[in-house]
Image 1 (cartoon, rainbow, N blue to C red):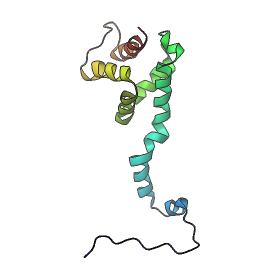
Image 2 (image 1 turned 135 degrees about the vertical axis):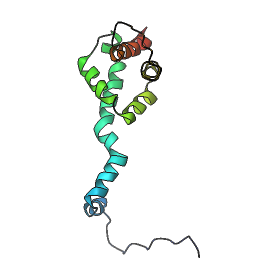
Image 3 (image 1 turned 90 degrees about the vertical axis):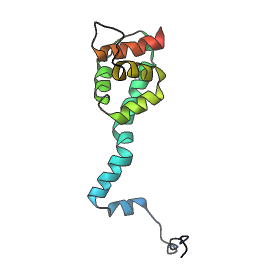
Image 4 (image 1 turned 180 degrees about the horizontal axis):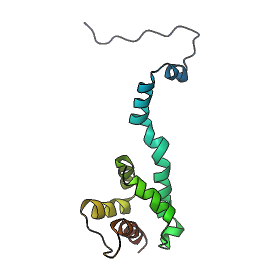
Length: 127
């Protein structure tokens, strides 16, 4: 028996609209699709990009600590997907993350590991 069976041709003059198909999906399947494929782009990616933009901004280059960015980054450190995205998109972030959170070696002994992590990224970028 052949495995090359093609799906049937759609009836002529019928427009297919993805929203029509989504509307009839069961709620648990919609939730599964969202959690598996969409949630990062919808909920976290813009925050990650904001943090990356800040680390590369003039304000960050002056080594100014930003509480708003620190709070957002603190929340993102609990999200494995966000960490992977940040590490992949910023080499200094990746290096400092490895040093602080994998090797457990901070650069600034009198600071918390999180504060040392942020300042280390800035120092690697601008000094």
